[in-house]
Length: 194
Image (cartoon, rainbow, N blue to C red; front, side, top):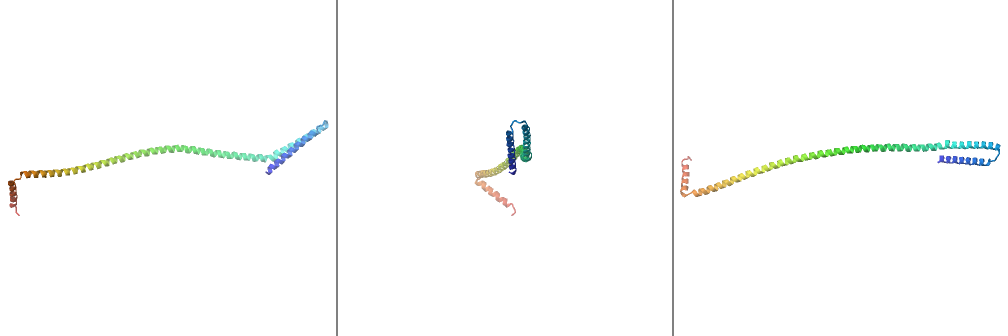
């Protein structure tokens, strides 16, 4: 703020000097040759004063303002450069991640295919084992049913044989045959020692 006030005062002084130079130039416009050389001297004096003021304003007051503006601009440029570098770094990071992501997706797909194939093989193996177990169980059940049927068949055959023999014996058994059998039985006891 102080610096801006000094710049403002310098501009006021320059404007005052310019207006005074114009006033002197307007007042001296007479027609006299000696006055013209004096006028020329005053013009040069005024020019030197104005040039000195302009030099002083541009040499002393404005350089700090220009320097501050240049510092602000260079600071903004360096911030923008840093932001650009950071943005480029993030872009490269994102591109790298995208490249890795595509690779990871391909790896996940390959792993999923391997896992699916392994699962299919496991299920096939389990199915084969289940089929073998079912076959073995079925075979055991058939063998058990066959044994039970054989036992039942033997029992049925024995029952039928006994029934058939009984009916045959009943047909052939007459009172004379009965008596002969009993006497044969008793005779077999007589020849034995006690």
